Length: 286
Ligand SMILES: C[S@@+](CC[C@H](N)C(=O)[O-])C[C@H]1O[C@@H](n2cnc3c(N)ncnc32)[C@H](O)[C@@H]1O
Image 1: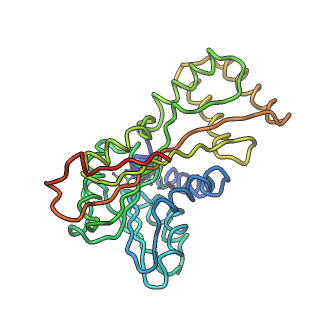
Image 2 (image 1 turned 90 degrees about the vertical axis):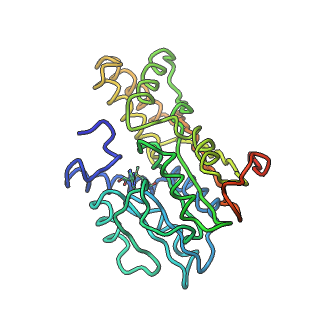
Image 3 (image 1 turned 45 degrees about the horizontal axis):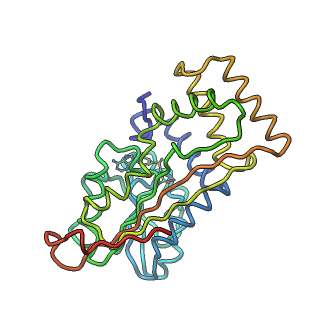
C-alpha cells in the first residue's frame, strides 16, 4: 500500500477503495465532522441556480450536503481521481437531482476558463503532490467574482487528555509527520490561495472537540497509536498503556481531544489577473 493511500484510493485495490468510501461516509455522519462540514458549506454560501464543483469529492458526502441549496436549477459536480470513489458516490447519490460525479484530476480540470460559480476542496490538498497547481486550476476555472473554498485540518493542533506528556507528544508528532499526507496543510491554505491570485480572503478556524466515541476524532486517536506503534515510534507496551488510559477516560466520561481545521475562502477578481497586487487583498480572521 502506498504511504498515503488517499492520493488515489483506486491505485490500492478495489476492496480497499470500497472500505475507504465507507470510512468517508461513516466519518461524515459523526457530530464533530458535521460541525466542520457545515462550516465549510456556510463559507461556500451556495445559492439556487449556481454551478459548483468539488475537487476530490470521495464518496460525495459534501456534495450531498451542498446540493439542496442549489436547487431547483443549479448543479454540483463532484470530481475525483479515483474511479472507485466516483462509482461509490454515484451509487450513494441515486437519482437525487442536481448531482453529477465524474473522474478527474485536480491538477488538470476538464473545464474551460471562467465557467463555474464556485469551487471547493475538503481534506484534499494534504494528499496531493502539488497543491498550488490544484488551487491554480480552481482559480482558472471559477468565474470572475466566484468563490474558491479550501479546507484541511492541521494535525499539529491536536490536543488529548493523556497524562504522559512525553509519550503523547512522541506518538502525536509521529502521526503528524509520517502518516497520511501533509498534516500541516491547514496552515498552508492561505498561502496557496494567495499564490493562486485569489482576493478578499477569509480565514475561518474551526475547532472540533471529541468527548466520546461518537466523534470521528476519538477513533483517530486510537488509529494514531496504532500507526505510531507499527512505525516503531512507540513500543507495543507503550501503545497498550496509552490506549488503555484513553479507554479508561472514555469509560469515566473525562476524555477530551480536539483538532483545528482551517477554512480559507477567496474570490477570483473581476478583471485582469495579471494586475493583482497585495494591496487589493483583504484578510478577515473570524
Ligand atoms: C480524504 S478524501 C476526502 C473526500 C471528501 N472531500 C471529504 O471531505 O469527505 C480525498 C479524496 O481526494 C481524492 N484525490 C486525491 N488526489 C486527487 C487529485 N489530485 N485530484 C482529484 N482527486 C484527488 C481521493 O481519491 C479521495 O477520494
